[in-house]
Structure formats: structure tokens, C-alpha cells
Amino acid sequence: MAREQWGICGEANLHGLHLFFNAHDGYEPVIREALSQLPIILEEINEQFSEAMFSGVIAIGSSFWDELYPDKKPEELRPFPAIHHEDRHMPAVPVDLYVQLRSDRQDVNYIACRRLMSLFGEMIELIEQVPCFRYLDGRDLTGFVDGTENPKGRKRRDVALVKEGTFAGGSYVHVQRYRHNLARWEQVPTEDQELIIGRTKIDDIEMSKEEMPETAHVKRANVKDEDGNGLELMRQSMPYGNVSTQGLLFVSYCANATNFERILHNMVFGTDEGNYDHLLDYTTAETGAAFFAPSIDFLTSQGNID
Image (cartoon, rainbow, N blue to C red):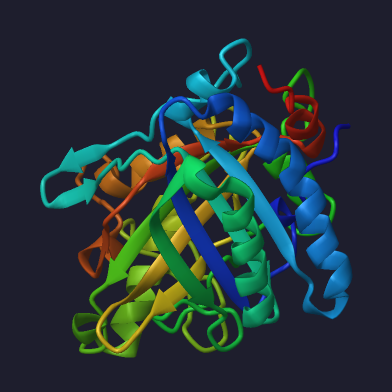
């Protein structure tokens, strides 16, 4: 298989820096060249600071892909599925390029960011940057463990990476920045919080089918296909926040785009009885974008300036 970008399936880190860019018109050939050089630069940083467990991922937005690589496109790469239903909204905010930088040292992420900005220069414009951090033992700021259902070991690659064809080793990426209403959440008794999530808060034990409400986050985020198989994602989400704003930067990687779309739909609409994900009463999606993270081999092979 083609070499995947290592950060797609990497283990959790202490610090993350997530960068969102739009490209200036007319720079597509030189952006392709810069992208072909980026994996080498990221590997150099990883070797220089090996103890930091650094990794980086670059992903191309669904709308920008056609301009950057007009001759070939991942089959399921399409715009983010914006949803607006009652008081629940999943907006789409298209972005050309997404960069995930993660390590156990915040200064290493900063160094990588500076190298990247030097490489691209005036070709791209920074739209948003979201610094993230590991909270306690891998918990969301709601106090519950995040990513419990993530695949383990070899299965991480099976879930996250395209297996065959031109885009083998690549991954479909969906990113949403959620803003939590922690003041409201913290007024909810722990027992009720556990019913909203579907797991115990301290021990991270999933409720039984009999105990778990249809509106629990665990219930609504677990979707099965027509054959009864669970639709899985490789989540690399991290909390972010300061004294005034807190939330979760949701990031998922998958071998297809459909899994994410079906899970998001099930959270917002729920069942025919209106059993949507009640966690959405306490957090709001403010952005949403779809990308594809090609393999290292694909990126390096496209570095030909017209």
C-alpha cells in the first residue's frame, strides 16, 4: 500500500495545532509543488524532535481539489453535508487546505507551523487556527472520555485508509469546530449527564441497552449498515479553549465519506420518534468542512510545475 500520512492513525498527543487556509487564485501549480515537498519537511521535524512524537497531516478541500488536481479525484470527495433541522444546525464552511500538527511539545508544533508558512508564503491565506490540548486522561471538556470507540491497533488503518486504486493510503477527512455551553452543562447533575452521553463519567463504562436512552450520544453516534456492521471512524478530535470560549475540534478520518455523513444525520434527526442526540442541546457546531488527505506517494508524485 502507498505510504499514508502518519498523523492519520497516530496515537494521541498532548498538543495540537490545526490550521485552515484558502488558496489565492493562480497559484495551483506552485501549491502542488509545495505540497510535494511538505512530507519531507514534516519528516525532518519528526527526526529532529523524535521525543516529541510529532506528526502532520495535510488535506485538500472538496471544492479546491478540482482546481489543484483536475485530472484525478477521490470517488467520494464531496462538499460537507450541511444540515439544518429545527434548532440543530451543522453548517458547511468550505476551506481549501487543512493542516493538522500534533506532538507532545507545543514549541515543536510552532516550529512546524513556521516551516509550513515559509514554504507556502503568499500562495495561501490563513483563515483560522485552533490550538488544542489533551485534557486530563483524554477527556472532552464535558468531563467524559472522548474517542472510546476508536479502533485499536491494526484496525485503525483498516478503518481510516482507502485500500485500493490511485488514492490508496489516503483518507476522507471531516472537521467540525464545536463550541460547548459549559455553564449550562455544569448545571446538569452527573446522573443526567451520563444519560445524555450513554456512559459513566468517572469509569467510562457504557450503559446497557436497557439503561441507555434513545437520545444518548453513544446511541445516536453508533450507526449500523444494512448488514448490521457498525460504521466506524478514526477520530483524532481534541479540546480547545480559553477563559471565554471552550469546545471540541472534531476530526475524523475514514476510508469512505459515507460513514461520517450517516452518523451526523443520525445525531441530528435521530429516529422517526424525534430521538435526536441530546448532547447537541449543550454544544453547537460552528464550522464544517470535508477534505481528502492523499498518501505521501500521491503528494510527492504531483510536484510538477507547469
